[in-house]
Amino acid sequence: MPPLVIRTHSAGGDFGPLRAEFSLPESFGPDVLAEAEAAVLDPLAERREDATDLPFVTIDPPGAKDLDQAMVVEKTAHGFRVHYAIADLASFVPPGGALDRESRLRGQTLYLPDGNVPLHPPVLSEGAASLLPGEIRPAVLWTIETDEAGEPTATRVRRALVRSTEQFDYETVQAALDAGNPHPSVAALPELGRRRRELAVRRGAVELQLPEQEISGDPDGGWVLARRPRTVVDAWNAEISLLTGMAAAKIMIDARIGVLRTLPDPEPEAVDWLRRSAEALGIAWAPEATVSEFLSRLDPGQPASMALYADTTRLLRGAGYTAFDGELPALTTHAGIGGAYAHVTAPIRRLVDRFATEICLAVSAGRDVPAWVRAALADVPDRMTASDTLAAKVERACIDQVEAWVLAERIGGEFSAVVLRADENKAEILVEDPTVMAKCAGEKLTAGERIGVRLTAVDVEKRKVSFERA
Image (cartoon, rainbow, N blue to C red; front, side, top):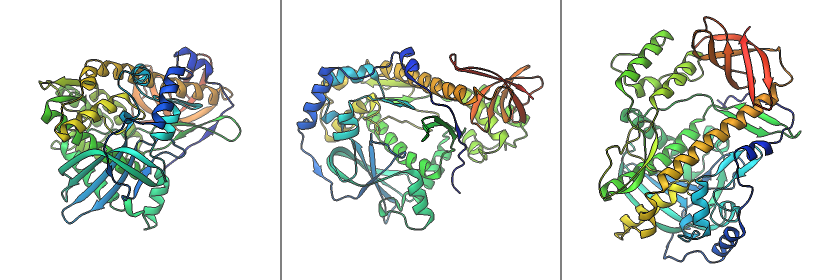
């Protein structure tokens, strides 16, 4: 079944004021651009395996140019083999140079509807470092062998030359799978993806499936709000990245040096509170079922499920980046994933991946971790936390702005909505068409209830919309 997409067109709008409000950089300095151009012509030399015979493919949103990952998934006699090529940014970024300094300041690529604020200059992020189809590229190549259940049995990571043969998006891959004609490089992805999802539930991974708001441009120069639940191909693709990140975490933990993405386990009181919320919403939760097992069985399209997923965010608090060198930290796991995990699969778009990858390469080759990487461990976690905070604020502000533009001419209109959270005289709601998350005034509102609401006010400059129960 194709994903549900609800679209509403707005008048055109300018994100310039929002960019100024958050002091987002408009370009790169001449020293950074010069160093990037030089790196394109002469990347840092290192011996590489030739893996250009592997038929890599990429799976990304339509139109993406900053392609971090390419894969080949094979079924073997004993399980599965994953070849996962990751863009090798360290080959283009001299330690301590202008590119390195600027990327540390930025932390990650920020995505806005009218264009991104890239971590690296486009000559690298959308050119020489990107795993574009038909181009030979330097990459960090992970090869992970698994058993029939999808559990890893061996991991190898090294530098290589690769060539992507095709650039796909999620819908294209899904359509080919549905037609029974998948590309050979991803023909085994559904089976491995399902096995990895089963393992995630057994590990206790906590995955939320709240509908995501999505903004895109329309041919008339306006903006489109969409609600697109994640497709199964998206989920399977994510499992390959998670598999690799967990393999990287094991390498670093075994070597007692690295930087992990961590999240503490929820307190028992929080789980008890969630059970009470499920009961109040009329959702059966077997006493022996874990949080992960329970959530995996919910239908994300049902109003009660949406409300419970909104409540479950309270379990996933305290995420951070934990660096260590010599002694393992008290917390090495991520509750949302159900195990130890590290970011290594998106170095074009995220700073920490470059350093974590260099640690894995050095450990796997039996070499000392480079001094510039060791020195960065004291600094990178705070920079990533700050950039995550900024990215979340920018994303929310963009959505709020488009919501205000979309609804500006509809004051007094009535809409259908689902109550996600409710207090005595107000609630957080999800308006279904257009896809808007907002506050709503009204008495005796109940989480999980579908209600009619009336739009009472819109402040475009402050990016605020207000509803009341109709």
